[in-house]
Image 1 (cartoon, rainbow, N blue to C red):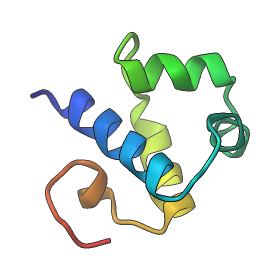
Image 2 (image 1 turned 180 degrees about the vertical axis):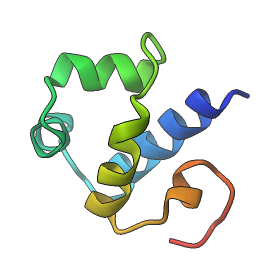
Image 3 (image 1 turned 90 degrees about the horizontal axis):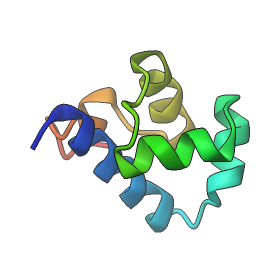
Length: 72
């Protein structure tokens, strides 16, 4: 599994676990809901610059998003 797939999977899990609407997350990231959908489905690569923003939003480490740590 590529890092893009791992990041997308972990963000999808965080969205589900925290009952966050994709449009709410996309607004917090300053992107369109369609862009977020493309990143989460793997149609487009998740921009590396958004990874820290997502980690901060969910209160997790970047390593957690990359699947390198179970620590949140």
